[in-house]
Structure formats: structure tokens, C-alpha cells
Image 1 (tube, protein in one colour):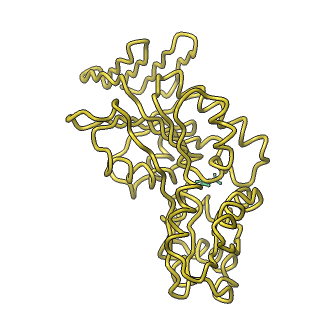
Image 2 (spheres, rainbow, N blue to C red; image 1 turned 60 degrees about the vertical axis):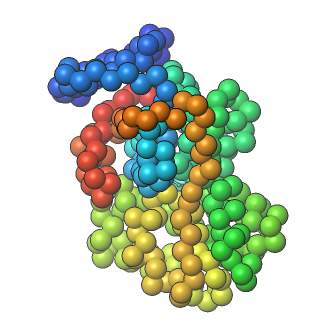
Amino acid sequence: MNSIVHSYAQLSLIVSRGAVFVVNFATLFFINCTVMVSFNNWVGVIDSGVGGLTILKQLQRDFPSCNFLYLADSAYCPYGTKLPSQILQRVQLLIQFMQGCSAQALVIACNTASVYADTLRQQFGMPIYDVIAPTCERVTQVTKSKRVALLATNATVASRAYQRKLKESGVATVAFPCSTFVPFVETNRGDTDECSEAVNKALANLAKCNVDAVILGCTHFPLLRKKIAPFTCGAEIVECCTHFQPTCFCNGETVGQTVFLTTGEEKQANHAAQWYGEVHFVHVDI
Ligand code: DGL
């Protein structure tokens, strides 16, 4: 039974399936009715699916005392083939949800959503960290030829957010829309021949581009790194990153906790995230 009782007004979530998970004003969590954890200080991390776990891993490594609330919007995945207005509205909803859970800061672990980071920062009174600006900084330091390739979702490429930002630093971008890669990661089929065909088709011209750095401008793509690498002809592969800076709420000595939520099916999210390690997604209706 995966039924959910969910109410923003009461700021409460009650999730069945053996686990009882309550968020209230004091942000107390009861997990499996045996463990009670008090998370007063959350960092929300959002993505359209499991790709953002690549960013979460970096955050957990760098800030081990932080409590993270990871939200995979699997029911709405992929973002990269949707309209800008649809993506923005959806992300606004996710941020409202995070605010309802008393998140103190938000990491947009999704390039396609990071396109709207400035707009979202103006709308929401919480620190919001994106992945596009920091990744541009990283690649600018890597490239010597000042000519790089961008592999990203169709929507990220079409937004020209990367291209514009890199141009400010004198870096030219050759963009490859690669939304076809995303479902392979979401269904844990990255090692199939079908996935190889999709990569082959999308990146057939990459070798001719004469670039010295290739940006994996989608948080799902590091999971396909082995498939992508043969097309990069020795150019340096640059994965996305964020400039998240914890304030006083992450400075404790205790090891932080992470809770995983998905708007999709728990089973599918757990399956897709096998590479991540021990993870138990809990469904939430948003
Ligand atoms: N992982 C996301 C990104 O970094 C988007 C994947 C999708 O939903 O299309 O852009």
C-alpha cells in the first residue's frame, strides 16, 4: 500500500508501507516507527529524477553533517522535452513543497531547471544554488582552446543559458541536444545496445568539433560516462557541480541524514538508483 496523506496546510506527510514519516512544525521524523530523528535544518535537493543523486553524492561528501531532503520528480520526468513555462511552473511547485518541509536552502541538481535559477531566487526567500553557473566556471578553467562542447537536454540547449554564460568568458560552445539519453538512466538501462545507439546517433559529429572540453550538462549523464567517453576524442569531460555553501545550520559534528522522496513509483526510483547505493525512496504526491 503506497497511499499518501499529504497536506501542505498542516505541513504533514504520512506515508504508509510500514514507514511512518511525519513532518510537522517541529520537523520531527518517525521512520519505521522505531527511529525518531529531528531534522530542523534541511537542505532540499531537487531533480527531475535520479540524475541529481550525482550532485547529492558530491554534497554528502563535502558536507557530511548536513541533512538532505532529496526529491526526484520522477512523475514529471523528463523535463528536457517540456516547454519552458511547464518546467518553471513545476519547479516552483517543488520549491513550495520544500519550503513546506522547512528546507533552509535548496540545490537545483538539474541543469534544465537551473536555467530558471535567477527567476526562482527572486521569487523565493531562501538560498537557491544552481548547477549551470558553477559548471561554466569549472569548464572555463579547464579549456585552453576556449572551444567546448555541451551535452545537455533539448530544453537546456534551447535556453542558451550555457552558451550565453560561457560567451561572457570568451568560450565558444558547440551544443548537442541529448534528451534521448535521460530515459535510459531513469530505467537503469544505461548498459543496453539501445542506449549505445542513442549515444552514437546524438554524438556522431562530436569528434569533428575540435573542442578540448566536453560538459556533461545534465545530471543524468555521468551515469553514461563510459558510453559517452569514446566520442570525446581525449577532450576533458567536465561534470556538473554546484557552489552550495552551508551556513551555520550545517556545521554540527553529527553525521547528517538523507531522506529520499519521489513523485513517481518508489520501486522504479529504487531500481534506477541502484548505482547510488543504499536508497529507499518514499512516494509523495505533488
Ligand atoms: N537531470 C536533468 C538535468 O540535469 C534533466 C533530465 C530531464 O528530466 O530531462 O538537466
